Image 1 (cartoon, rainbow, N blue to C red):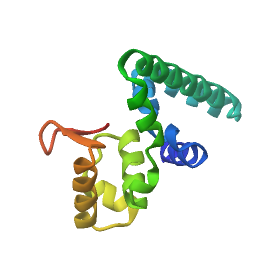
Image 2 (image 1 turned 135 degrees about the horizontal axis):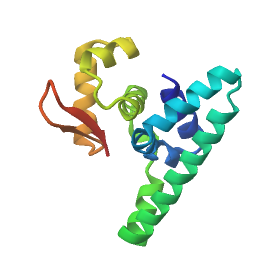
Image 3 (image 1 turned 90 degrees about the horizontal axis):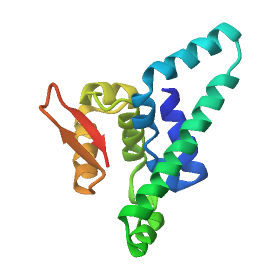
Image 4 (image 1 turned 60 degrees about the vertical axis):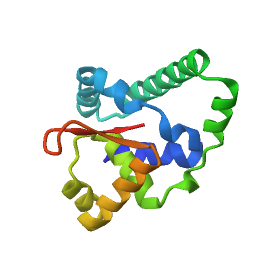
Length: 148
């Protein structure tokens, strides 16, 4: 839930930060992530966690800039930076944030977390897939969601 709030706060501050692949970076360093959380518990101080997350945000930005320089034309880069979150409903934004934090979440789990019906979640997922922001990878039961 904390990562959902982090994504929402960052996207409110700067809309382009909503698409940072922080979850991927954290997933790749999951052991260190949990070590830092444990350290914060022992010290009763959140400073190590803030330092860790700021470092990961900087890393995600640096990787994004590197990727952008290597793989995108200037025109494509401009087009992406002009993309607005207003193209999405509030439910869609929340779903994307939750799926970034937990790509394996089920429709039922999303519905419970957002206090929506499973049918509403299904409609939102279909809309996000049609908008090219979400892909289903693997089987219905064993697969996961990839936020694009």
